Length: 160
Image (cartoon, rainbow, N blue to C red):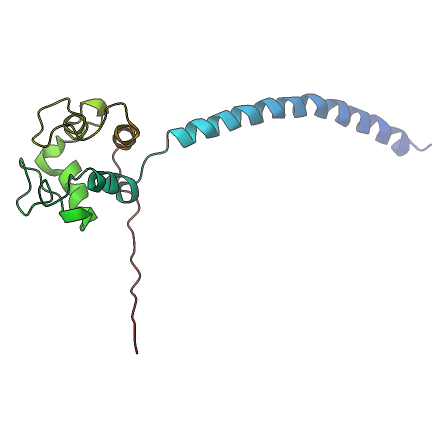
């Protein structure tokens, strides 16, 4: 055997032995990554336009009899049935010196507390504080109350 031929089996043996612990470590790492992926999915920040606005609509918050009225209610005005998401985002997060959203302590946000009946609210309790809708709203606030991705509406032209 030439010197190169005797080295090859030794190198192969070393590489095989060296890879065994690495693959065991990889299975542990992949389990940790899978757990992290599950945690990340659970902590996903809800989208303002596709999740928060529909929640407010289902709850009647932006209806004509409530904050969707032309003058709004209680110094809070939303667009009727979420017709203007940008204006709604501004009303919720920026107007009144951003007092409706408390990013440092989301559970103290006026939007959350009034909807859950933890503060006086002319519309009464809208959300169950332990329900999925309240958790969705709270997760959005915990995530920084982002505006989400602007939706571009395609134009549909119908011709005869």
